Figure 1 (cartoon, rainbow, N blue to C red):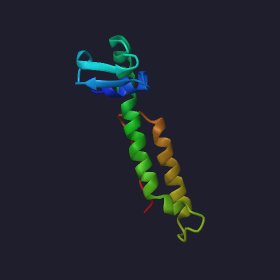
Figure 2: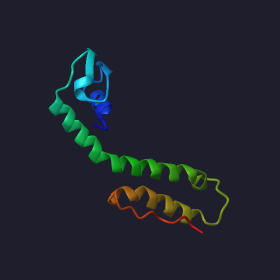
Figure 3: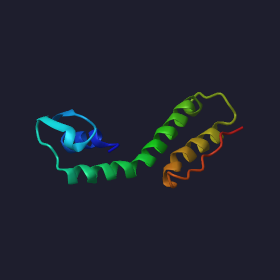
Length: 107
């Protein structure tokens, strides 16, 4: 159960839990313990969302690396190329997160 603890936090954020890495080994110290069915459903949601989360994480890193090229006072003659590249980075989330074609940085 890869996302067990994330599921517990999402389903019962005010609760406190102790225990191991299986549903059966977790003890609800404070609050409400979600049912196994609720946990399994949330885990499936988190697993399905993971590729897009990782894609956004990588995209955000690439955007951060080029932030300086999008400033008002960027001195280069290629500013529009970088703005277009950054827009293409933002658009990668419209692709299948398991088969992304990343845009190339301007030369």
